[in-house]
Amino acid sequence: MLLQILIHQPRMLAGVIQNTPGWVWGLLAVLLAAGVSQWLPRRASAARIAILPAAMAVFALVGLFTAFGGSGHGASTTAVWLASLVGSTMLALRLRPHAPPGTRFDSATRQFQLPGSALPLLTILGIFLTKYAVAIELALQPALAGDLRFSLGVAMLYGGFNGIFAARFLRLRCLARHGNIHGLQHTSIAMHEPT
Image 1 (tube, one colour):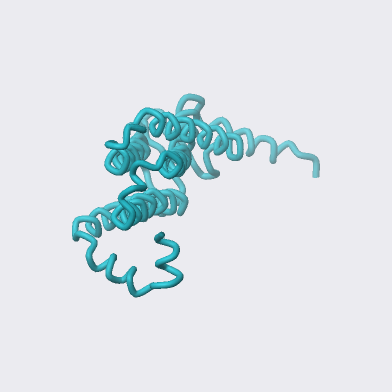
Image 2 (cartoon, one colour):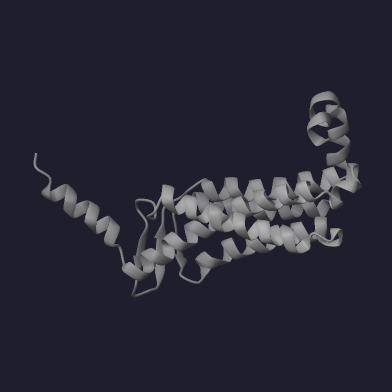
């Protein structure tokens, strides 16, 4: 329905946006600030790197339960979210098994030196826009709250986004456990390559 409004009645979407409660825009501002902060190189403690993935998982689960909690599909929706999270995490780790170049862990201070990345901002926006679009769809078509296929599709989307955060967290934890091995290996290989 939302896609049809965008294509056939874009003015109606302006009304939807105008009627969105102010707290939603405040939440978006906070989420954007969190995402933009990830875009810049920074230092973060070992404990702090867990906050964003955990917060985004809670945000996704709250979105699922708010939208579909009364539908009777709570267990299957949660199971699909979890399966999607695990699958997305495994895929992301397979595609990029190591922390990005320039990532370092200082075992003395227990802090990471992190390069900037736009991926967290894009993932945060993906989760927020999913929640926002689902809220609009349910306002326009309340019967969708009981549609199992719709709820499972949303759960899969949320889980996919959460898996991206989980993979990032796991890469950093692996770096902390094994030190800056990968960066050192790349350096030593470059020094011993024949010219």
